[in-house]
Length: 306
Image (cartoon, rainbow, N blue to C red):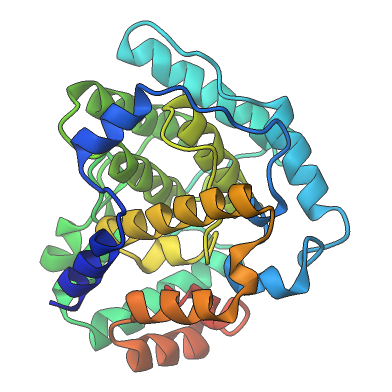
């Protein structure tokens, strides 16, 4: 009910969300600036610290990576376009100096992130209704984890066991096939792609950066928008449902367009952040906070889906 009210309020402000409207918009030519706005890379919750919030060269390096690795004009059959998208992703990974893939998914890796996520997951499984947990794993694509396993077995289980590069290719194939069907909102399909990548967690580090670059490239390739200035660029993807995450991307697109028109980061206005937190309240915040603080102190409450 709360989400429905949030959606109604969002629509009342003139934000179109239908697949038809997005596809119609994609037919229009976007004139995007060559140099991205710094708010693309520094999310709204950190905007007060300015363009160097994540380090002296972070925004410049990310902007350079985006300019040097624009999305290819992938054509041909679904399989060909999927390989093209994977090659684009690999170029971004190389730009971020993270060429090595993990050979297991997020829930299986032995690294600290994997240990923390398993602990958090089992805590959430005890604390939340199972349907809430399922929303965290459910996507509209062929993702490596299956939310149905949570209901049946209480643990996220892999739908298939293949090397990570093959898993990525399978995810991109599912994405391009779904785009061809023109049934789902293309922005929701992009949300599903980003969630699938997050749960696969293919890189030893900088997974969030690689997803952010992919998001910006795909928005331009699909001619949906020139970019996003999201309130949260990273960790909320793990906990938000596809529906909620898509709404937040729409908000980020609106913030980008406002910034492009005013040449000022709208997140510097504290009323914008307050409005975001009101529009997207965190369900079961107490339970989620306790699980994150208990099992993931090194990644902390940054995983709360604000």
